[in-house]
Amino acid sequence: MIELALRHPAGVCPALVGEGLLGGEIAALTEAVSGRTVFVVSSPPVRALHGEPARGSLAAAVRVIDLDVADGEAAKTVAEAERLWSEMLEAGGKRDSAVVALGGGSVGDLAGFVAATFLRGIRLVQIPTTLLAQVDASVGGKTGIDLPAGKNTVGAFHQPALVVADVATLATLEEGELRSGLFEVVKKGVILDHVLLETVERDLDALLRARPRELEPVVAAAIAAKARIVEQDPFEEGRRRLLNFGHTLGHAIETCLGYRGLRHGEAVGHGMLFALELARERGMSEEDARRVGSLIQRIGLPPLPELSADALWEALGRDKKAREEGLAWVLPCAIGSGEIVALDATRVRASLERFLLGRSRRI
Image (tube, rainbow, N blue to C red; front, side, top):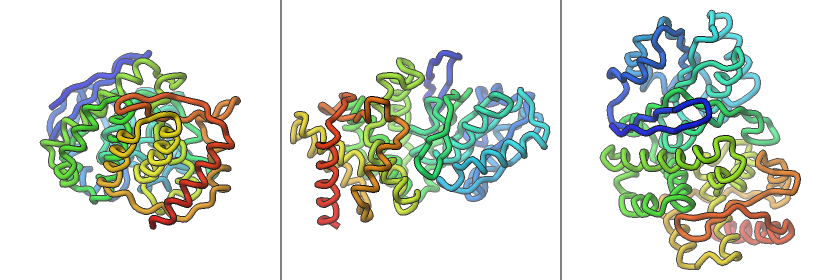
């Protein structure tokens, strides 16, 4: 097991990464839930796979109450959050209760938001069971739900008390889910950690076969890279915005598709390819840009569905990361480093139209 820690203004969030953690006695998890009523938020398919071993690791809780939600972005709504708040209150939830998020990134986002707002905030434990959630969504304290006009447009910062990433759960994923998570790993490697990128390039075949020996260090390295930047900027006021590489257009794509047709990581993959085009215009070397683009394609990026530039442009204007002065873009400068820049809107719009035309020609 690899033990990591993310230090934040309210304390420290331990993150445990290893194979076969669920079902065993995890001292940090026992401490996090001991003497508490615990609400386990999960989807029925995930609960069928991992609910029993998770319950075994929650034996120190006074009560364990299961709360089911839908898989994917469909769960991240105001109505679902309200339903969970009501069920928790009716079940006797208190200020010293805890929420355990068992599942992928969407479950973690919703459960985290519910924990952040129920009775003005209760304890949260993240047990991510997808690669995307383990390397990114469960770490850093971002929670959120969607509105029809934009993804994660309502949310709060609420750091978990603990993250438990059991890489054995990744063997149950469809290959598409593994690929989706790897795009988030690539994001961190391109912007923050060239060694992590080299590891994915070298071990890609083993990672796609969900081999724990290769997955464990990659998951740990991705968490460590994110923890370093979150510690510097816990509320995303500056440098933490680098983690949005690929997400600006990626979120717009998801919004325009109604959160159907592409997984989150796949939309981010297309967003990274577009950001690479913008980065080339600012001087990123062709060699580095081709290297990243080649890896994204090796992972296996589905075609971008037909989308209009007008619809995407409108969605970009509602992006939660936008400021009064406009939308900032996260662009790589070279492998392992990036920058946050304001770009001329007219030039970005022209680049977007060229990008969409080029993608449609390659389908």
